[in-house]
Length: 283
Image 1 (cartoon, rainbow, N blue to C red):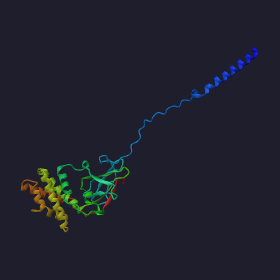
Image 2: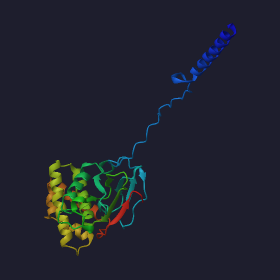
Image 3: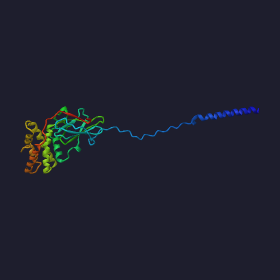
């Protein structure tokens, strides 16, 4: 009998041992291999490119535009090529309009243009003399309101509103704008050399002469350049009478007018208008 009890006890002990060992590998107590946590990336995603909002960063020089006789346009763009800065370093005035797809709009570029009172007043008078009136018919049916006159020394800025569009414009050489700017700049410089007139008087006098220049150029196509300037500034002409309001004293006005005419004898020859040419920030 004692032998049987011992055998049963040994069997129970063996069973208990087997159960204890099995419990180490079941339920939530199963050991796991730790997975290392990924560290968040500190690199910032690159920002999407945006279109330029002005031409102040247009410092990447492009090939100068010289397709038209008498015209040289220095060109520059920015890293996105969504801006196009054009500066007229040639001898004659141009009119600049948007590209054929109308993706580019035009803005003034005062930071790259003259700032003295005589030159800016002359430019303002040219811009408002009627060259770009609503009735003006420009090549390509471009509305005059979308055009900008750019005389020698002045600049214009072309911008696209989409970062995927390359800035581009069209331009043409313009005879009347060249004539007006030569005349009004010469008179403005002479008036300022005596004494700069009051702003409103200065502008009104030059505007009157600018309109007379445009009208005479249209009526007297038979005149050579120097004959045209002499007729324009003759005694009793609208330009001569307007100039007298800018310079006090008849003798001083006559001397200044003679000096202006002498200067006009040396300006570049006027040339006829051209068709439209293209310029792009990718060229």
